[in-house]
Image (cartoon, rainbow, N blue to C red):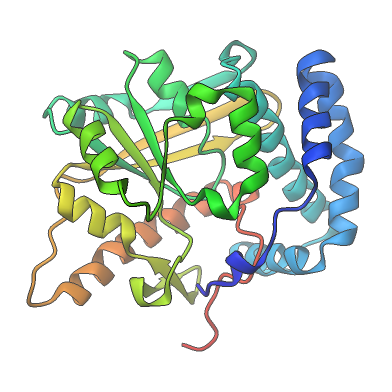
Length: 298
């Protein structure tokens, strides 16, 4: 995958996002969801690059061109998760039916007393991960995030739930590793995305959905340094008010040898790419990387 995603600014404006958040909280979820239909039509017609990226992804998954109905449904799934983020940030988990699979695996890793790194992606909702922490023994959850590339979402989080905003650890900050270590030492969980490249030199090319794409190695390098278990996380939107959360043990400890570090990183990332591909095929409408993902130069 290239750095193309960094060139795509967030769509919408601060005013429109605040208005939608007001509708969601004041008029309720049914009214807010009704507004998603014209919003999705607007973005479907007006975002050519994103639409082509979705078409490419769906053709790789299904082996056929995507119809306009397919594309609209894909946009609507994405818009639904963005709307529901408002309720998640406000702690309104009671509005949703959230099925969590694999809590026993997370329990088993946390019982080792070293904390845990959870590796997610832009497949489904990462925000629903907090439902796991809040509903299950109040697990401390910190999220590594590049907030500079998402100022509108950052502003929304700060307005709706300042306490949640404080749990975000800025990627690349001077005290990033200190905050990560402190959370893990307390037996907490640190979440990180594994599918968007920040720097080409810190990425590897993996086979993904029949092509070659770049994946960032930051998550594996972090897990190697902190020496904690790693668990995969997928929060899939299933329509209506239903979400399915999957937690899967990925590794007891990510080890990178000095002699063949590059090879080890590629093997670990290919394992991740294989699992991501499998879940993509299970829930393709949840794929929210709306830009050129495959690297045609390889």
